[in-house]
Image (cartoon, rainbow, N blue to C red; front, side, top):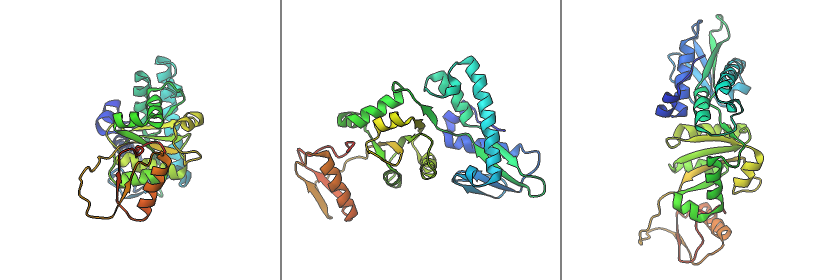
Length: 286
């Protein structure tokens, strides 16, 4: 098994530190591998050929074996940390000591070789989300403020985006993602999205897993996809010149109606919307 240190995670970010741990795990194999199957959506830059497989731990036996070994080693580390910092093993809070110990485990990886005959190895990481169950957690409190208050969104310059397609659109537009949260363990589709977010997220990106009640209290969408992101609010073009089709909203006060009109404009290919005085805030939770 190989690891990335807390310092490396803070310097490189969690994704790059995980890829580093994967390279170290493969390099440490006593039986030299000729081909690697990697759990995830990108290769870690190995000296051997290989293939990245999203949700590979459910699809490839070699990755499944590596994942079991990584989880077992992580659990042993967490129990050891728990002896020094009680409660660490539960991973239920975001305290400084607990974050540091959990981050040390988050950068761990394991490579498992299926045998000298095939020389195929599976590589799995333990770059898992931090599970949060407390409503008093500072990350949860910040997300709830953004969900409940348009003013909080304006002051922070951030808002919430819920759903795979909305978050993918934000990524495609180059909008920074600061937090990615799932409702319990991520589904296969959500897990693939989370990996894409980690590849292009803002520095200090937080990946968290929320209990159902906490997530539902934050999510701006009822019966949504179970994944939401805290994103930066893009800058507003205040230029008075319009040289293309545009929609002008004159005192449209209901946030739901503003959202409907924005989605309609996007579906019609209209790229610019002007909100006149008295219109609801375009980045409200509705």
